[in-house]
Image 1 (cartoon, rainbow, N blue to C red):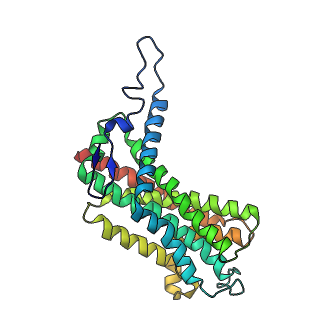
Image 2: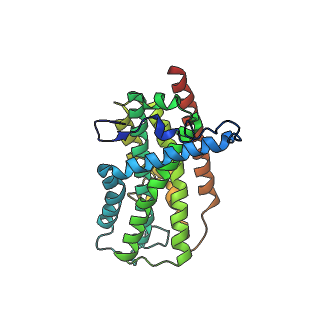
Length: 287
């Protein structure tokens, strides 16, 4: 087991070859299905990634504490009687969804992209290719682990909204908010994988920050897009973060997510997954 300069432990290949040497059937035993073996190795990688993320105090601060703190700052002194634009939502309820989305974005985009770029640079990804872990297993494992880690980020903001800011919703709305924001984070998890394969270890942080803050601002997560100039509103309407937050805000208003927002997110998901797969194959050819 090796440790990098950030204190992140990188277990040897045995950690992700569960079902490899130890999992080989004895002679005469029925061989395990290939799909089952690939799934077990991908699951092992997900457990490893989640464990590493939960040990990273800096990551936990920016994904858990920072969004909730920003939510309290933005809504300080504001009650539900202050509505946002034509949404009909009180300011605390509106920004509760925005900051929950922002927290999930932080968890799946920033941490994922920087970690992948550094792992490529240190040779960890190349080492994994020598194991029985399939190539798509690494990509899917990164996306899945990022989605798992994003769940606490969402929960913290929702709990703060309910307990501190007095946001009141029906039980089905709370469950729908949690499910929609969590599922939508997969779009940005795929983007994080793509950026991690696109940038080098030195360039990944400024590139990720540019994308991260750009999507947050243009998507209306920090400031309602209705306050933007008309030309900027037209751009914001097609941002994935705008559609992402709109899912939960539609539920808060007592309705279902708009089909347009769902289609926009699905389109971005396909683009980001295709981009991540293409960049992964390109990186494989370099190795």
